[in-house]
Length: 289
Length: 254
Image 1 (cartoon, rainbow over the protein chains, first blue to last red):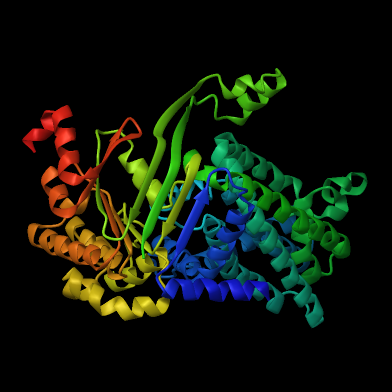
Image 2 (cartoon, each protein chain N blue to C red; image 1 turned 60 degrees about the vertical axis):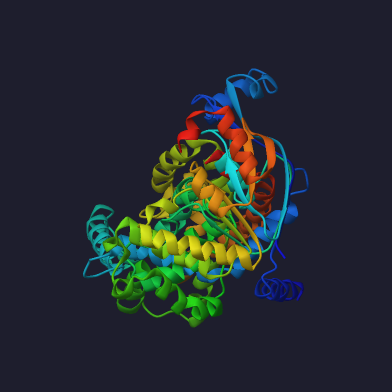
């Protein structure tokens, strides 16, 4: 593969202490953006270190450490599961998995959207001090959100083992594919929104307000089947589809095929838009932040 | 072989009024058809660097001289490849280490040992290299058993020692210093200056910005004077200091 050869090239150059950095203000910036992404990928160890540092700082001195994420998720899911099963007059054993998996998956999806807007604004102290590929910060965010989701999804695992009857293995694999699609799209969204959020500070506030609204508009804790004539509220809501590709296969919910189709299209469009933005404005980020 | 070339580099900072940087006002002026005017109204441009062309090669130890706001830090950031200039082009050949920030990337809760790895990864060093240089870094920092303790227990001088030891351990071809070296104690400063001299002597380029003429004379052989973002002089360091001192009597005292 072409990627491999460039990889080796870079490494041998590095060991020869012969790095060359060239930048011209009026050259086409696509190549710089591409190099930035490649460089960030080759430095995955740094991404891991950054994520670990963030977790260390947040959970330093606590007895549970990052398992606080699991504990918090358990309490929320149990609380909502019990109370809303009563409110909606639903059966506890079908409602608890629905709202439990729904909430945790929603947290994963909305985490990308909510935090992407500050991905550059909040890391200016790093890239204004050292030469570092700028796509490394969306990677750090992606890494942190995956790790957060991992600890929370232990609750999903518990629900699947103890509450939900076993499904064919293929369905679990489909749900994992859903996680991959969310992660992939989320990474590109965090580049796209990170750049917009750095330039227009209102954007971050707007997204914050919008996501609160979106939470209630998305069938996270209520059943989309009950919408009746208003079914389009769910159908035209991309968040519903991203939720449904993870929760749907685990709980035999309808429209999983449709949701995969919709999210795959989005997963193909966002990289194009994000890369175009990145190539056009990457070199402006140090000025904006 | 280390080499730095700047060609007609220009940097302008745009200071927007608060209203300008909001999406709402951009949309408003768009709606009123003020698309082009939008770029001219309510904007304050600061030219930090104007038409700067410099070329340096092995053995050049360059001191940057200039008043506050003359563009020294901006130039160091362009030289480090951190700030992409808005005009012109740059070429940096050789491994570059910048000591612009002490705290960068350091994890307050991790030990000194762990922080060596963290900081070195930020600098883009490979794992093998870090392992290779690890003992040297520990030894040079003189932190001894403190390296087992979390960084938050370190004094600011100890942090400087650790950061300096890491930054200079990987034999950079190009070393860039903003003036913070004074933070260590006297003995360590001597030792650090000695190491810098050795590093620079081996080959490579050294840049520093400082307001201390004495330090600059000791460390540098070339001087660059910046005035309002333009290079007004480049050449011998003594000459540069004299010209600068003549223009600014206060500097004579130092």
